[in-house]
Image (cartoon, rainbow, N blue to C red; front, side, top):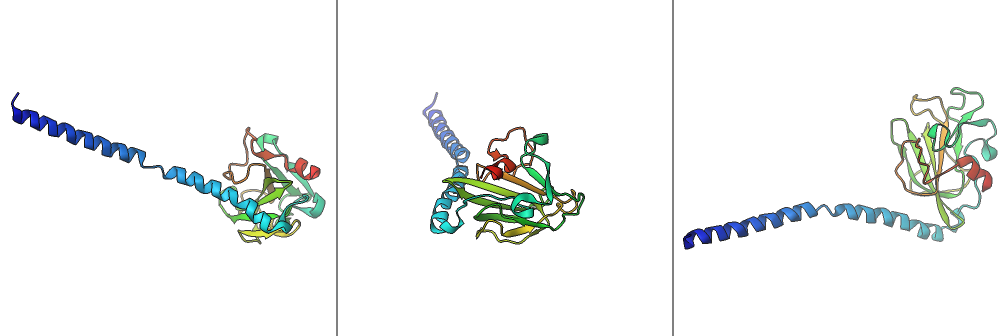
Length: 208
């Protein structure tokens, strides 16, 4: 083999190694996903500071979200875990759309971190973070006809936050209420056999 051929093969091998290294860098580059996780964690960590600075909004007890304080004039039409339901569906005793635009109240003191229309079967949704006995809980109010509160604000127990809706006519009017003991989860689908992160809303309110 001539010296010229050996030199050519040598430079080809070096070039291939450089290309492989560049390819490896491209494969490993999407580490920005880790940054997203850090952002979520930072978002969670802000709540202790928020409630420390605003102790008047720490939760001390819970009430029902309709017919305050004890749900008078309403009934739980689809209970927690019934048909794999992850919340309670509060309907007016008159049935149908008789409770359309009735008031919805915050079940406890807290911080509103989400309040917007996410369309589809959810419609207008309000999500509130509660600090209670050193733990964090989240209440979710779905299918609202109107939202009467703003994101990134504090709320007192019993204050009106919206009105009962029907997700733009998809259902008869009712309030879908969830209480979660894992905050900041994805909105989810409202139904699942896996109830991890969710608590029985009626039982929780009655006990607290």
